Image (cartoon, helix red, strand yellow):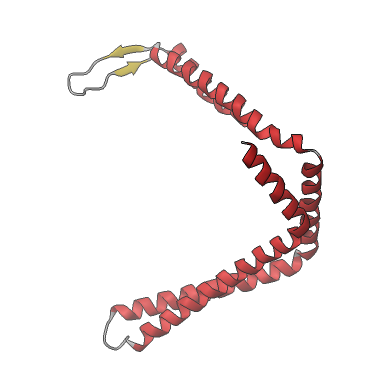
Length: 176
């Protein structure tokens, strides 16, 4: 666990110093991936176009790959326009990342919050599973001649209690 904290602190130091570079590299990687996918689909479509006369299935592949390449290029173009419109917001997000990295570097105790919450959630889920199994098993268990598994029938109160525990467990998990 100490190794993970050490890696997290090094990553935060790296992120504080190079967050702009990391964000822009991710954006460049996104655009490069879209353009590369479009180019691969287009090149593959051209290969199918050359062999369309000999194989009827190649016509379908040609049009599908050509359409897919157009879709990738259009997504890249629209994404670029959206990027141009969002440049100020992107700079603000980079500043927020730098500020968050500075905060965590100055207060390393903040890194203990996720493990503590994980322990509490683990204890809660253990209690919750036992409680749900208890409520589930309090129904009437009947065997079946046609199946090796038994079935459980509930009265209305037991069924409502079971649903209450299911909903309550998910609700508490969302708020912890």
